[in-house]
Image (cartoon, rainbow, N blue to C red):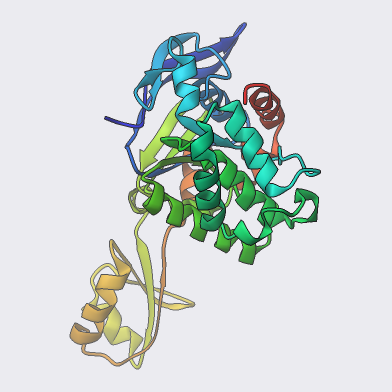
Length: 319
């Protein structure tokens, strides 16, 4: 069974079609990235999946439960980590998690062992008695992830999990995310506008103008917009051009476009017959993919736009 299944999903606000017949699946146990520029319909889709909004048409299920007819079941089986902090900073880390456990009706005997387990997982067990207001931004994010895991959800939704954090802290957060997926056997559905982070995803879906315009692995998406570019300098570039059909000369050297630059370069050194003095490989990036499919840069993603705050506000009212 897929963790998330979406078929023909639509959502209209009057004459505005926010989501226009979206179909996709999220496989159980994978890390699924959801990307889209401002107004793409990404936040609306997530709101529907988290039972924070009702679809106009189509169907969707999360953890095997219909998001329209089985909302309480869906909510029991998902965890939510919002971009903006929703922690009570005047309470300790432990009390924030205990309050969450109460809201989800966790059996009392299971709260303490689970609390220790998730806090140890994110490296905060020793700070369990500290007030959250003393925590750094990275520590707060780790605590929110622990809170989202407290009731053992089957699908964890992470909205911009590392936005506003420094590169070192971002890297550590991703270490925790990858560790929890292995230890918790959980499906992760995330949004991010950091393209280097999207590389961590097993698959990526890109929405634009209410439609799903691309869905595949990071490698396949990059391959869809171009080939690797191998640039070499040799002791005799004229001879290299003769021996490399399709190669061109540029100010940077001799350029060859190939499908897999890493696999091609060792073969090139063995077979060219002309000494190579310098070689470089450039590949299409996920930024190129995003621009190719949406016509916008990643800076225009929803995290900086007006759609996100309503999602946050709606989410906080349905904890």
